[in-house]
Every structure is written in C-alpha cells, then in structure tokens.
Image 1 (cartoon, one colour):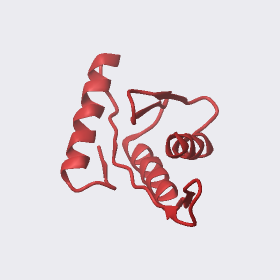
Image 2: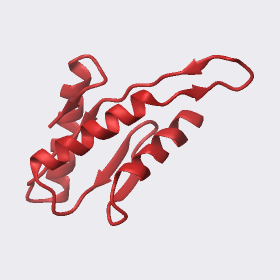
Image 3: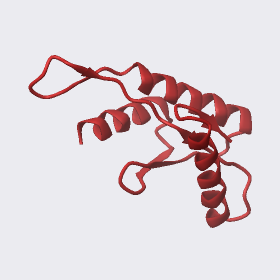
Length: 105
C-alpha cells in the first residue's frame, strides 16, 4: 500500500489539475489527459517514470529503502474510449516486454 500511495503522489505532482488519475486494477493507474500531442504525452510519461524511479521508500521497521520502477504505456488519437484504453494497454504490454522501467507509445 505504501508503494501504491507514493506512486499516486508522484502522479498527482506531475499532471495538471484538469487531468484524471484512476487506479485501474491492483497495481495499474490510468491517467486521462485532454488536448495533448504525442510528444507531450511521451515527455510526461518519461518525467513520471524518472520521478518514480528516484523515490526512496522506507520499509516499515527496517533501515532499508525500496526503489521501484514502472513501465508506462500511453496512447492518443483513438476514435473511442475503448479503443484508447486498448491501445494504451497494448503499449503497456510492449513496455513490459522490453524489460520494465520503459515508456512505450
């Protein structure tokens, strides 16, 4: 739960107030951005990926710090919400296949 909360905090810190962040499944988040171009979406995804990778999460009861990485898939320009979600999901699968801690669009 602590890791999920820290990731959510980074997402909130890096998107506009008008953007929508939704926890989608156990360990996935969905961010809906309006009026964004492909390059801007990629840059934001990279910014979020880097911010999360720099986080140090204290493990309860230990002196160890946990570092996490994320894979991010994004999509733009679909004709429906369902198509947009399916395209983003395919991008996420490609990112994970490339070895994690990757952005794919």
